[in-house]
Image (cartoon, rainbow, N blue to C red):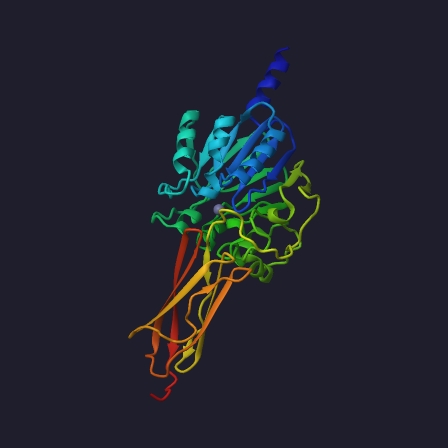
Length: 391
Ligand SMILES: [Zn+2]
């Protein structure tokens, strides 16, 4: 009787079984990951909170949580596509513990942040701010906090992403690396951590965005399986990632639905919602409702006086894009610098002639992308090379 009581108590609040199912829920462009270990569950992010995403989260939670309790909720970083669904989760389930990044300058302006905060407060939870280097255990599960490294304190979208909580979850010899939305600027700080040997499942950062998952990151992580939680089937990073890495085991939630990777600590099995396993995924580009706007401008090659310069950017398909090129004398009026709409894979480019009289040196390019009330602007510089052109 006494033994039974002790066993029952242990199984209440820790993962007391030696297998775990990790469900990467298909919430479109966002993250929601349920870590299910018998009667113990953790929810890492909760999706954007729009109806479709909430429906997906609701269904997976209802299927796997039978006691009305989520032992641990985790917010990787305070962006709407990660916290948006928590309001409903907190209203529906009893949550026992809440972890979040050390980020002290969150972007609180996103839609739904207020209701997220108030439902969190209503739970009466103590928020634990995790620190790089910390290790925590939930029964057999071990959490290593790899990031964020030194916090970027300037409030900026990129900095919020780079301040994401990066967690390595291990059961036995098998590891899951949850990257939040860390971009390449925040990856470097992770490399001081040595990853353990054994199969590694990578939750690709920032929904497959090209500004994350550098070659250095892939060299460091050497994942066996990668999951991209995204709302469209051809995330702009895929071309970039393909050039960095063989994508034999990369699955997209947009292509196969919710993906479950289960392990007993020795090996992994995987099941996708559609029962199929995706490779890179055929392109059926259409931004998900509420897809987060991004803009990535490639470096512009130095161009000689009289030569043709080209600027290439990736953004959401269908976004309205504009470019202004500033020389020492003011904005360029060259032909070819007209507003454009990003194509079906989110690509947009401009080519223009640099005048023979344009002063050599550095010039500034400002590119903007706008869709559904969201606006992104990026500035890049390029070099005008003195070719001794006449004029
Ligand atoms: Zn995100």
